[in-house]
Length: 260
Ligand code: ZN
Image 1 (cartoon, rainbow, N blue to C red):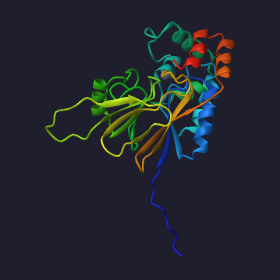
Image 2 (tube, protein in one colour):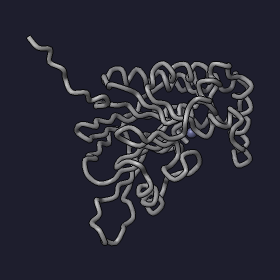
Image 3 (tube, rainbow, N blue to C red):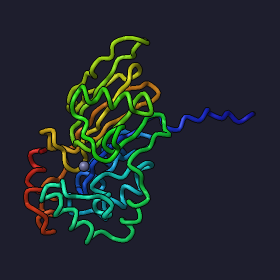
Image 4 (cartoon, protein in one colour):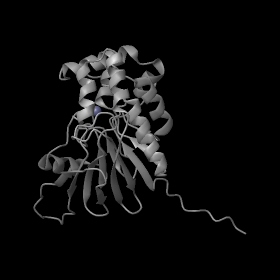
């Protein structure tokens, strides 16, 4: 009997997650949910550290569980590779605490990451296709420009901590270009992304800012071109208590409860 070799199709079902921000209880809850959904690989869009109190634990888990991991602006700030003069006082305090606290292993892990990866079926950016480190993609006209700049038909971004998507219809040559249509995406929102160009934010694992305090991730099927937004309850008290115990600004603990 000849051996039947299945054609290689490396990334059929993926978990896309972003902005963990050293929130270990949230990251563990998301990883448990991902495990139950039996995806092939997990890809992280960056900001593993910053704001939260467990950077080393989160970096170790990201290294172990995420096949792809980008670096985000907070990771770069903790590595002292980014000017933080525009950071809020609480964010700056967290950067300083993280730089002083994180292990050499965490530093080495983060220092080896890039803010964009465009050699997969979908393009990945921490912030935006035009500026992988800094730009927040939140508005339809701006999203249209970003979508035109992205390296693949479908791209994923993090950074804003808001679960949302923008889409541009396929455009015939000479047709007037339109703004992207888009919307915030609550838990259970599913997208059929087989046509058109898409820019999708899975939301944040460790510090959601879209009014839903639950940890966010997104399931992507690149065979059926289908995406589903997930939200997971986690131990917010545990994450908040760790922030206070570390001497980080209490505001960073309080905002977790309201998802802002
Ligand atoms: Zn972030």
